[in-house]
Image (cartoon, rainbow, N blue to C red; front, side, top):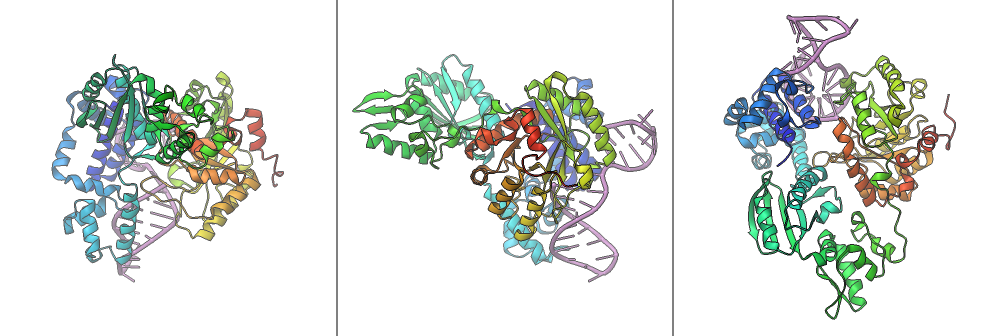
Length: 576
DNA sequence: GCCGTTTTCGGCCCGACTGTTTTCAGTCG
């Protein structure tokens, strides 16, 4: 089953949406949304907490604590049941369409009877929206485009969600006696940014017993396909899962086969064939005689090539590189020495600086930058005074437990490329991340100039989530990629690989191109809660998919070298 | 509904952007 905090957060979030749709107090809506985020990020499982424990969760007061308790102990929340009875189920899904909020969702339901995304598409097709107050042809067209972009994500799971589901299933199966080994394979193991379904692979002598155990897992709702060695299931959260059970002695060959990609496998089999051998999920064989099957490494070795990490297996040149020994030394999670983009509760983070620092120490980090939002993102109410107070507190805390704290900020790149604060004030930060948070649809030339101006600022070290995309909801901003990458390489400004599962930005292909043009990277969590520090692995996976070498990731460097980079000493002296 | 070195009531996330207006409403970050 999913973590209780996630279930509760979903319920609170649904409450917020339904209150909004039914015209409830916007401040109340915000309270539920905030509580939902806070619960999701809370490190302690809510189903282990009593009333006072629930009340201690930030943004949870007595009313919401009572609702959480009801959800945990009685399985439902009265007010949620009542609202569900009032609002058609499909209406809430309209809120997922970017640009459509609660007021207009309610309006098109009341006046046109539109209660689902298909209804909405039909109404758009008949140009029925433009007759409503506040609507016109342009807003119709924009909405149609938004739905198109939104559906492009096509029901695929985000990497973070899929990983959590898969790890839980692996854990559940792994504790069964009959199972000798179990892991997930497929696109999830390759760490693609979205995943269609989850592929599990188990090794056992008795496949039937494993299939029984699989069917019996609490999170498996249905097992519509069930053969002796293969089952296809749906989880209680609607995720499709395939399980294959193989004999232990062919584990490696099976893992290779089920990890893919298809293109990688086809290329490997062609190589095998040319060598007079045959590669299948049962092993690399010659005339029926098994040459290699137990481990992936053996199979690659028998094919005369280096082991290819799963994240590279897309047939994008990795096989040739593995054959001639030129695979890159990829960045690894345990080489990450610190995080250069984090937030605290001074702005929109959920944890205090002390809590974030403790979590970073627990991860074994040597340094962490606190980069709260800057004043131009006005909803966060940052001020110069607050930044200075934070800096003093951070200096006092730095060094404890071997963790150096760097004082930074996540600046806002204005449409003209200028930033929050004046140059003198900026020059006193240890590290500056600059990001686009507004005017996403600036024209290509203006957008390119805007970002390059920020890159070339003498105090800016990292461009945060460079394309601004949000997987499944917002397309990337448009700029001349090569021009921006060349500018970053020239200026000694790193580009971020943001590890948040709905960002993964830069994505793999852009990261690979950027590296070719000499760009350095910061792989950052953009954590807004202690738990988010764990997202680092998704950023590292994305970097690996982009062939990013460890030496090009600045937060694998020792602190002294990182500081020289942050000072931009290697490029030019700072402007006055 | 939450929360408190100004407050236990009355604030709360402010401003930009967009398309529709004829002075503004809705959405977003």
